Amino acid sequence: MMQGGAQTPLQHLTTLLGADCIVTEPTALEAVNIDQLRTYRGRALCIALPRSTADVSRLLKLCNALRIPVVPQGGNTGYCGAATPDASGTQVVLSLRRLNAIRSVDPANYSMVVEAGCILADVQRAAATAERFFPLSLGAEGSCQIGGNLSTNAGGVNVLRYGMMRELTLGLEVVLADGRVLSSLTALRKDNTGYDLRQLFIGAEGTLGVITAASLKLFPAPRASATAFVAIPDPERAVQLLSHLREASGDQVSSFELIPAVALELVTRHIPGARRPLDADSPWYVLCELTSPRVGEPLEHRLEDALAEAMERGLATDAVLAQSERDRREFWQLRENIPHSQRLEGMSLKHDVSIPIDRLPRFVARASAWLETHVAEGFLVCYGHVGDGNLHFNLNERRGVPPGTLAARREEIRRIIHNLVQDEGGSFSAEHGIGQSKLAELQHYADPVELNLMRTLKRTLDPNGILNPGKVLNVA
Ligand SMILES: Cc1cc2nc3c(=O)[nH]c(=O)nc-3n(C[C@H](O)[C@H](O)[C@H](O)COP(=O)(O)OP(=O)(O)OC[C@H]3O[C@@H](n4cnc5c(N)ncnc54)[C@H](O)[C@@H]3O)c2cc1C
Image (tube, rainbow, N blue to C red; front, side):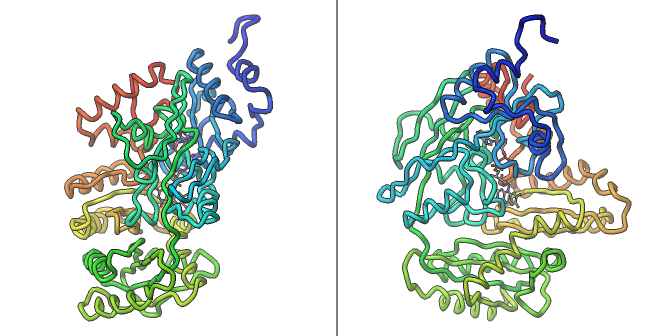
């Protein structure tokens, strides 16, 4: 309770930014209070909608002085509850959606500077307008924001060729917890002047600073592509097929996605208009794509020849090439609709893991065998960016089991799967981050020296713990 005359935090914020930048309307709050997977529900004090980096700076300075916790939120498409406020009713959700300018596109330098509230698809379009290519691409690209992509070090379907957000970023503008602005929107590829501070904020999930703008790398626009949907006997053959295609194409593979039969079945059952590209059944499929910036490059022939050879060698059993842009889009829709179909099917447990590619088939075999014997309540939907060693090793609740049976075993199942991941030299979080959902996992699996350094960094950059508290690390 505030004493007579003293302002409430909400009044302070409103005085600072103006009433049109502070939202308390219940429907708007409802949308930011719940995460993408509907696992976490919080209660925000308000949503702050700054108009500029200077506004963000003034806001954080005030929040730091008054110890008001701030939860940055982009498109709220993340899978770890990282952008959801807690239930205290004291946390400000900070949305940068008004900071959505493309500040510059420099085709000669193959770079662009964009504000953090830009929607990813808008960034891709701005690059394409300048005949350049920004390669980050993922299912949520119509709503996720660059600030969120950076803060989760997002991956997506082109990592194999172009890397994750860490590799795609030249510089950042970041507002620190005390309101100071770190302005390093460099367009340089080479700059060895001390520590690489930008990498601290990429993947930090809003716990070390608020990203307000970024300088991003661009590439020559792809002018030719060839896409195939391939039936394969097992993940072992997927790994061999990837090596074969990389060699046969001169390393022109930009995407290589593993899809199990069960995922294809879910998508064709739940998504109107989705159809199977191949008639014959196969336990596994791969969606692969070659791209080149050279106009008229005969990629289709190259892919066709490489796949014919793969079939002779027993790496694939059947394949179909996209004959048109429409076919290509349909193939990709099948892949991109897997998460949505899983949601339509019912409750699921998600594990976003990565394993060195050569050990990936053994991990799949070991983890599947354990699940088959011990988890009758669920069925495995294991798919993903296998070219990067990244699998979404998910379990859907079986129809007919009492609702909640699978969820009740969440922690036990997760620990066994993550132990197997560790045993195979992998990571329990490949591209989705830590957020709230994997706090205990980080504590359990991280090297103690690493954890200690992370806490030291957090305390140094955010001594009052106002930035996204309770996410990534628990700092006493
Ligand atoms: C259908 C679907 C497909 C997906 N596919 C992929 C995929 O292939 N690869 C992948 O990596 N992810 C994928 N995701 C997960 C998600 O889209 C990404 O993690 C995305 O990068 C999150 O962006 P966002 O703007 O929604 O961030 P949010 O979910 O809003 O926030 C994520 C984190 O970033 C922080 N944050 C947001 N903005 C800022 C900022 N300006 N400064 C500091 N911190 C900030 C938040 O506090 C939070 O910690 C998918 C999600 C969906 C729904």
